[in-house]
Amino acid sequence: MLSLLILAPILAAALIMLGAPARATALGASVLTLAASVLIFSGFNPNAPGFRYVQSFPISADLHLEFTVGADGLSLIMILLAAIVLFAAVWFTGTIDHHENAFYSCLLLIAAGTIGAFASLNLFFFYAFHELALIPTFMLIGIWGSGNRRAAAWKVTIYLALGSFILLIGLIMLYRAIPIAAQSLDLRTLQAAASQISPSAQSPIYLLLLLGFGTLISLVPFHTWAPEAYASAPAPAAMLHAGVLKKFGLYGLLRIALPMLPDAARQWSHLLLALLLANIIYIGLVTIAQRRLDWMLGYSSVMHMGYIFLGIASANLLGATGAALLMFAHGISIALLFGITGELRQRVRSLEFDALGGLAKQMPIAAFAFGLGAFAAIGLPGFANFAAEVMIIFGAFRNGFEFQHFHIFQWTTVLALWGVVISAVYMLRAYRRTFFGAPNALGLTDISLPLRIPVALLVASSLFFGFFPQRLVEKVTPAFQTYFMK
Image 1 (tube, one colour):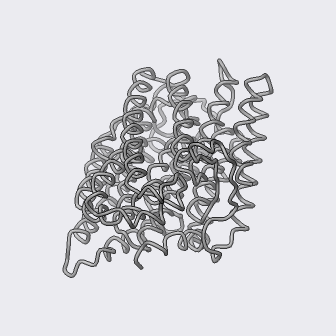
Image 2 (cartoon, one colour):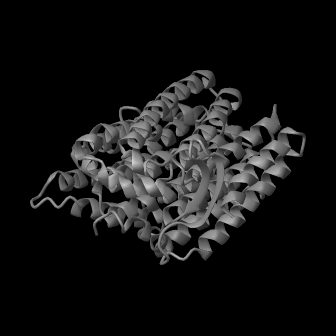
Image 3 (tube, rainbow, N blue to C red):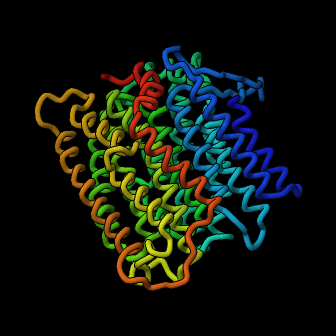
């Protein structure tokens, strides 16, 4: 089933490039991927130890290279996220004016790359699948984007290529730090042997991984590529990248950096706390200052990464589980918001707040859906984001490094709480200025009936896991119990 999840989008992309009907083939692949991911997720037994659904295919005996896939709870919720957002992104695509086949193929390859990275148990393919997903991202922005799309495409290419290069160096150093007798590209073997890496050797490796993954995630100060890229990208590309592909770096920190390099994680925790506070407070204030809806959403996505970093930095079971849940919840809510914004872009002359207003009277379904997405992003109770953020706040305040007094983690948590207020300010203000007040455009049509299907799926996913967060918690918690303190 895991191999099917990876191969279905790749085969569909190949068929489209060979002349198969682009939209029908992409929709079929997305439905198949979503159905398979739901079946795997619902049938997963979290009480059984280790990875499940493991398959290995030898590639090179001389290099000891095997294509190995498997999944635990953390992998599964990320795969489910990728499948949901792929389905929604394909539905939101609609008619493409030029190179339609290439557009749909790029969307499918992004999804295949992200699912492959989340499912891979081999360090080489973990990295390679992410690179596979980056290439079509650059193409989607540069060819089908809007505004200053070429500059945005070059900027995101330079930033993410640099981040990937730093990450590659860190992964190579991690591999070489393992004693020769235990060296392997298998993540399970690496994790078992990582305890033999001395604290002094861990430090530079963790720093490189943090910088590499952090650039891919848009950790301050390596964040400036993200708002411009999302504002310029076509809506389906922004949905997939901000909703899913950006989570690769967070997944890498949870899967590789923290469990394999715990001493270095503690050593560099103060640096991470300072940077994540910049993501929450500084970027939050920058988001308030935005005058365009698409740029506001781009900066808000950067801002919310700070909370996930806070859960990761907490280094305990509660905070790490909350971080995993927020990765899923944020992916759903930001995909919904970018999808609705893409529909607005096609109907109004500008996404500047001064040119918007009163759209709720003409587009009530879009206004209702955007409002639900905004409430989810704020962290309103009833949405998955709320449950995740509560877990992160409590986990970070308690902190797994067992400081005995009111310490830097608790001060950071208190300051981070102001981000909730900041996000409410910019999101509710944007909602009011876009959909209420005097209308600046007339004769607009609401989102079509078919598009209400992906909107309903995204909203239902956020609400379902908001009311029943234990359905995610019970899956992901066993993945962290072996190396995170309670």
